[in-house]
Image (cartoon, rainbow, N blue to C red):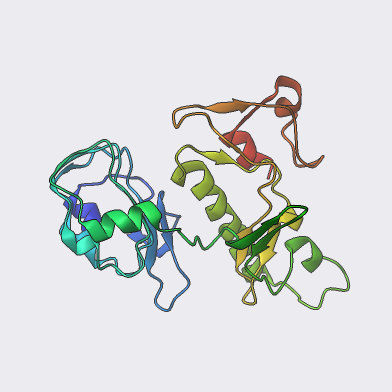
Length: 249
């Protein structure tokens, strides 16, 4: 991967092909195309220096790119703007100079990232007593129903593993891709929805909490969630953190 060489990135798990790795590359997500392409890259706080690597402009499928909190210098390449799928770009806390190309600034400020592993909000209705949220249609319902004896779908182990990976990538974005981080607080099989192709997406953010600031390690709040899916420490100490969300989800 040219970006790895350009910035001399030395991450233990960055070995082999990024979309066909022996172990998942930290901060990187690929789509399910044939061949798969990189759609999300988080290089925040990676001690990057020098100009923004030209090789980043070759990521034609990229949707989310985080280069924040580094030592990058020089101008923001205007070639970022034509990237067809780029809808979110973090460049803060660097030493970049010059203006951000207008079309790119507009995209970064106003674009809504349609993440593969989070159910997308399509619209809403707010008319006095008639209130509703409209989400994208998920043809195969929720994961819990797929495990019922009368389910029409028989999930093989490959499909189950991919569902687990999809859900984990959704959590990874909430915890590491959002500023500040977000904890779901009620991740369970009935809140994991499946598309027609059994792609898993996390839903129901009614109990979610955002950290007060990006650097916080936990949120102090009253217990909420479903029994059996809640960290006991959260119940007794009233603080929830990213690690407990991963272990008890």
